[in-house]
Amino acid sequence: MSIVTSLAKRMFGPRMTTTLRCLVRGYPLPRWGNFRRTTPFSSVYGFERGTPIDRHYLHAFLHAHRDLITGAVLEVQNASHARRFGHDLARTDTFDIVPQFSPTYLCDLAHSEGVLPGDAYDCLLLPNTLQHLRELDLCLRQAFRVVRPGGVILASAAGLLPLPGDAPDYWRLTPAGWREKLPALWPGSDIVVTGHGNCLAATAAQMGLATEELTTAELDADDPRYPVLTTILCRKHR
Image (cartoon, rainbow, N blue to C red; front, side):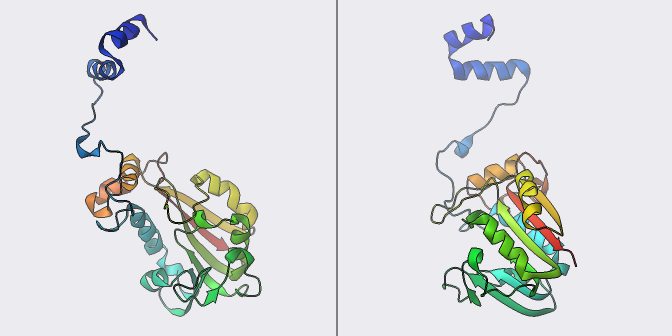
């Protein structure tokens, strides 16, 4: 710390010193407005305001790969994404560990042998799921087992999003973390892992703002240091 900085902090205090430093060096100053708060605008990801920020990236990902959501499709919890983004669906099955949404298969994915058939599905959808799987490695192996050769897994995992509070949330890997983990659990496959977001989108997501409160250009600006959502495409070799 320079003598000048030390003197300035004693004279003006740390906050004013930082403000003066930014002014002298031409750095922009924040205009906090109602962002200077310790509670978010929404505690439920902005659902009551509009579409949660992470859904912008999830829906774009599924739309971009809609050609793969076809044939026999298995989805966690309910088949809403399969029906919205899929085409030429031979059947849409579902699985969940709880009976609330009347899944086709009621099971714990980690221990689903004898319940979920192997090599049975052209596409497995795991949207916003991976962070909630306590026995993650076992779940990932089972997910790979149910997809037939040539089939795909389309998944997403939370990044810079608030913890849910009302449900377990175990894993917040970076895109690099997922790239490190998945090949050993999904051998014989092509895997593409992509992070989506930027500092504005991450801030909006943390504060509970909705997609509709940002522009498409603001949402789509890419900065790999701020992954709001990580998307994963796995194609199982024939």
